[in-house]
Length: 267
Image (cartoon, rainbow, N blue to C red; front, top):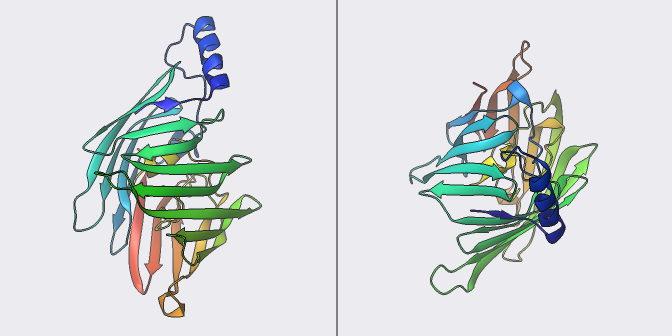
């Protein structure tokens, strides 16, 4: 998979390749959501959680270079991605995974992503992801099968609201309450990847290609479902953060009366 840049970025790449002898540094560098030892290297989920992937992430200097994702659940859905960076852009090769092609802006954020035949579009404001949409297409005939979209709102750098819509139906409103714990590791809120438009490719977020992280870790999520009050629910989050490193090592999630965990490792 190759990331394609707009014309001006392409011109900048050409100028860069003529002026630098370092062929390993791309002209547009994605800004990782965490730096140095604060970068999460693996995410493992235990307990009953819907729509989550376990991840193993590897970095070289300031770049994500490989990732392994495994869908948690009864159906095995595992793939590996290798990312390489050159003055011409970024290439991702997926083994046993979807074919992906993407267009990035000058800040290294993805603005369009094609996953097999599905198309995602992303918009940003001041570096934060503020809206996304996707169209799912039939693999055989190419026609549109379904769609989804999300609008994200922030307050003082914290993600506080998502309006999520499937197939142009009634919106599901997700209200997030930030905690007082800084999100030093740039962690995504557990269980919300689908509403944030990155389900199945969260590694691209951790590679800095889907916008800035929320400033604080989320404490509670209230989901007001489009299906009615009987389907509404609350998710509570409790964290364990190391006093020595500042890394968040564990997130305990209470989801629809059931407790599950996300375990984060940095080595």
